[in-house]
Length: 154
Image (tube, rainbow, N blue to C red; front, side, top):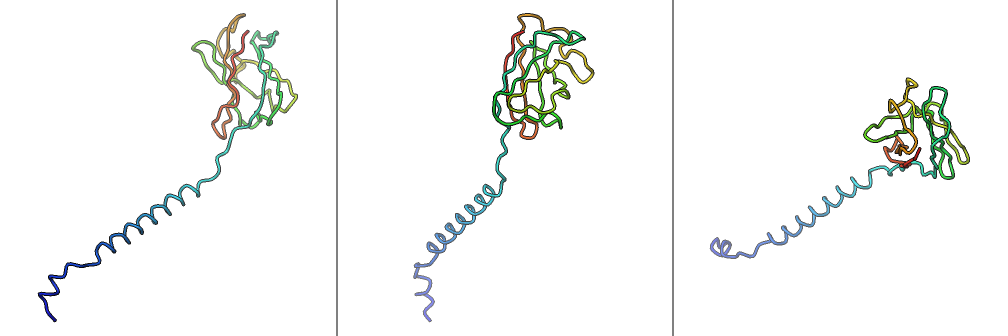
């Protein structure tokens, strides 16, 4: 065995091994990314509904304003189990509305919602008065997505 000849021969397999290692790393990365992406569950979407919201002409016995919801089509909206939240905003004041009186809202239903909190008090303190615009939002709490965002003129 000639040692001089052995060390002079620079032809080696390192380029081939390098390419094989790069391919292996690429395949492993692709498998890791693919398993992460495909292992996530499907995205849930909020109920899709067409709801008309209007100011109710008559206030309740305590003088608190109310709005009328009319379900014109789409999915049923569930208020009973605190699955859905309604918020109302007047100027800089914004608060959650007590929806215990709504139960569920199906296609064709018309329900009145008083703009009161859980204590039965006006969520704005005073108002709204004639001409005020109140922004009403219905939010699905399971998906944390907006179902309706509508401005209502009183």
